[in-house]
Length: 211
Image (tube, rainbow, N blue to C red; front, side):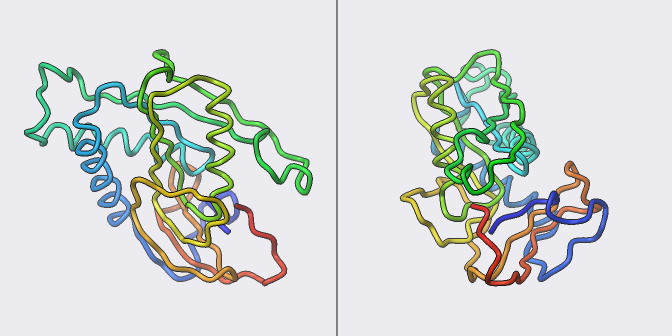
């Protein structure tokens, strides 16, 4: 199970075993930014799409980290790449989830696509936690209804394992072995947390997996 602050009390300190704090999260995103630049040989035609809810603020943070990384990367020619500002959008997956039959009451959130669209571009999906892979499968379906990117990559803050589908992240902030009886909680200040943190909490075995 993966949760963001929507599963906790807004403004309260994160509970459970602390895995990452704000400094570690920032360093993880900066490292991912350098990996993105190296893999794509720059930032031309790169678009970030955050998956609500935790993936959205992380996508915006990653865009900032990419700008910092690009400014210090000698392999990038500023004249060729121009302003390193990265376009960021939001990709709602509500109607593409495969658990709507079990959890039919879900409120769709807005999907916001950058003005340049995604056709022929490199789209990097951004999420907080990668677990079963079902959220990412839904994201791929949702994105296919919007456009046809030249390639799709996946960046996650935490990969906790237990995959149920053949999905693999291209960029991972933290590989975190977990038990199914645990949940990973990502608390972000943009979502109402008092401070950024990634924690592990134990849940009853009868509680259903969210992802």
